[in-house]
Amino acid sequence: MTPNKWMTKLYQAFAKYKLTIYMFGDTNQCDPVEPSDMFYDYVKSVVVSEMCPRRVEMKYIEEYARYDPQTRDLLTKFLKSGSIKHQFEPPVDSYHNICYLNKTRRHVTQECCNRFTENLEYYEIDFKYQGHREKYKVAVGMLMIVTQNMRNKDMFNMEQYNIDNIGESEDGNLVFTLRDTIFSYSEFRESFIASFCATVYKYQGGTISTPYNIYDVEKMDKKQLYTALSRTKGLNHVHLDTTKLNSKYKIRMPPLCVTVNSYFNDDYHNGQIYKITFEHNNKLYIGSSIRNLQERLNEHVTTKSSARFKYKDDEPIIMPIIRAPCKDRQELNSVEAEYIRYYSVKYGDRLLNKQSVPEQTVKIEYKHQAQIETENQMRERLHQKFGDKIKIKDDPMNKLLYYDVKIDGKRYATKARYNEQSKEEALTKITKKQQQLVDDLTINFN
Figure 1 (cartoon, rainbow, N blue to C red):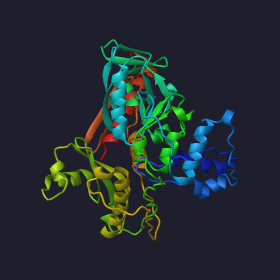
Figure 2: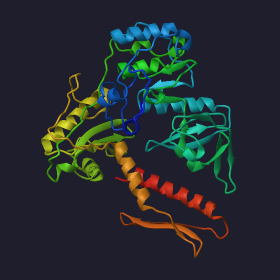
Figure 3: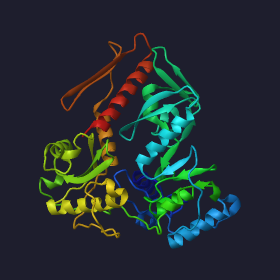
Figure 4: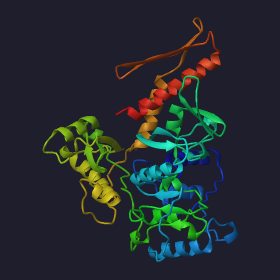
């Protein structure tokens, strides 16, 4: 699950300093995949083979293993046959849950938060998570998961902490204490989320020593279900609806759009694949365009002949999946068709333009190589762009720290004086505002 950018950094260090690299992992678990579904097969990677030319399969030793022999036997048979014959106990009330769909994660988290706060004083928090808003009840003692790296607080993504206290600041706003660190309301809602349920990709690497539930087993592929099952210490801790298990599981590969043409006309150089989600009916649509995405969405919801027109009141949200520079419409349609195929398998009837597609992935290859920018890479680039532009300047004569810039015709200006407070305090305050502005511009930039 190591992101591609960090694997690249590791290889660069390996090549520059001639390091000896040791990698440990279970190749049967979920493959690394970026937020835009860009797939990386590290097992077959030339780079990984160069860093680790010798591969050894470690033996199962019960006293040092995560799970018991019963779990190991079930997983071994599952890997060979793709089928599971075990009769699991049905789901129970548990604060540890693994799922596949974000819809399920939100639903289960909501139920757990309601159950946890039933006889406690609670606060309803409008969390900001993965570009969306999710409202949950929270109370002292609730376990939260970190959603972004906070190096200045020594807290990092996917770490878990209990809420130690909820109080009010001098200005009357809520403040939250976790691990003896105080967070404002805005910091808390943007840096944490209730940890009662997580997708299988988020749970990868974790160990669960208590009973837990697995949901969406019928939607998972072989590697995803293997990952969910192998989080346990004992097979009797796993709870799921056995009737929903598929008769046979296979490895489902995301679209392998690895290269595109380097010769483009002016229009299709801006090709991209996008998805539209509809908040009220839980539907989604996959499409392609060479134009501004907001313009494309407006066209969908204002053109009566469009199949999306009837959903115009269901809060449609358009988001890029991946940049796909192409030479012509036919080539862009080919990339779009591969993503429709993938999402048809993943979301079934939720996809408005679902198609009957073959199980085997078609690998799209082009003649000339060029760079594909994933959504995650795009956000990183924009974050760097805005960060470079919004520089904090010092006016020692007036004892003033400030920034004053124009971005897309809109002015952003803030100042902090250090005549009544120390320069360090002023710098801390304006830096916090600067980072918040950079984050907001990155998230909202189309």
